[in-house]
Length: 117
Image 1 (cartoon, rainbow, N blue to C red):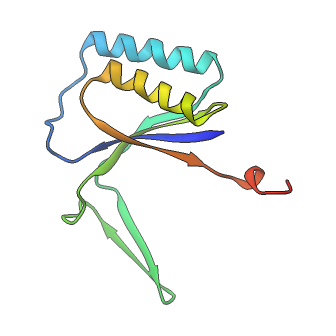
Image 2 (cartoon, one colour):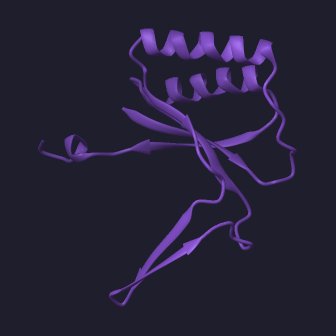
């Protein structure tokens, strides 16, 4: 099962550079997940982004930031684990390292996840 774990930011916490301790702990956590074959991809995302919408055959493109957005996804990890509970446990470990914050975990489906395949 693949899951996308996302960190979100609502603008209420000022951005500060990570401490050396945080960098070391996160580096070890990422190395552990990579070695175990659980971590497929990870990275940070620009909070503004580009919004693309399609309606009635017309595509519109708008650069961010968006005043109507309450929060933005600012980081992600794509993982592959056996169960939803494993995804939750890895997310808990992440937040124990990082500290305060919030995020979302969503299962990722692909062609191989379709019935009869």
